[in-house]
Amino acid sequence: MTGRITSLDLEQAELSEATKAYFTKCEEKLGLVPNVLKAYAFDEKKLRAFTDMYNDLMLGDSGLSKLEREMIAVAVSCVNHCYYCLVAHGAAVRQLSGDPAFGEMMVMNFRAADLSPRQKAMLEFSVKLTEEPARIVEADRATLREAGFSDRDIWDIASTAAFFNMSNRLAAAIDMRPNDEYHAMAR
Image: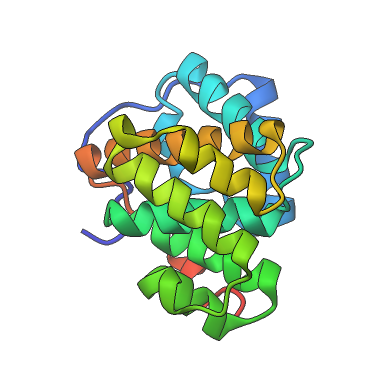
């Protein structure tokens, strides 16, 4: 079933001029339109909600670097075994870090990667939020503060982890497949 994006047969809606322009911008910047966007294209309202949240979390102002946000996406997606996000965001980690081996290590087991104490604290919190959200306590937030994160940063860490938990579950439910191009990026 080469070329399929999901296991669902949803008819793509007629795209508005704004969405066509957004897809063109993706092509120009990334060299592709991510399959996640194509999957959402059956309903522009859902597509807009997804892209608005994604762009705010991953590209907006934050005390977290773009690399750190991508690292959260990978750590959460690793726990959830999300093929789509591990491939797509693993490529982003390789690209942003400039280190393909680091990107691969992040996808396989972030705990084996050469991480700063700050990064370790951020990723351990994100994984705990993924695996045991009801067990997050003040001590977990205190650990992040001790690692140098502000309360706003903690919000951003939690929001990014939560977003990818939602995305991972949707990708699993519909068997979303990554763009083939991601496999060769930043190697």
